Image 1 (spheres, rainbow, N blue to C red):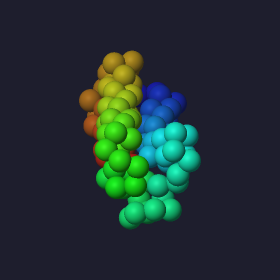
Image 2 (spheres, rainbow, N blue to C red; image 1 turned 30 degrees about the vertical axis):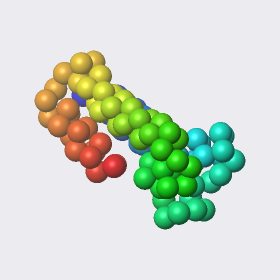
Image 3 (cartoon, rainbow, N blue to C red; image 1 turned 90 degrees about the horizontal axis):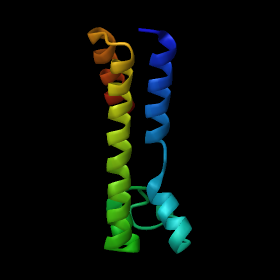
Length: 98
């Protein structure tokens, strides 16, 4: 597989995973940084503790979509240049990144 496609897919999946949806929701709509309250974790469970069920569920869905998109970036790279070994390597990199 073309190494640039590999690099772009890995970087894209990594960047998707680095989006702090709990921090964005907390600061944008509530003026609260969830990392400073509760368990100090920027996840959906702490968002539910600090901000309530609705924003926590929104963060949960956003995190699920990020994971879905990261997986599908790997699938897209497979369909661009189909080679099983590279597909498996990208899947392993995606798991290690998480």
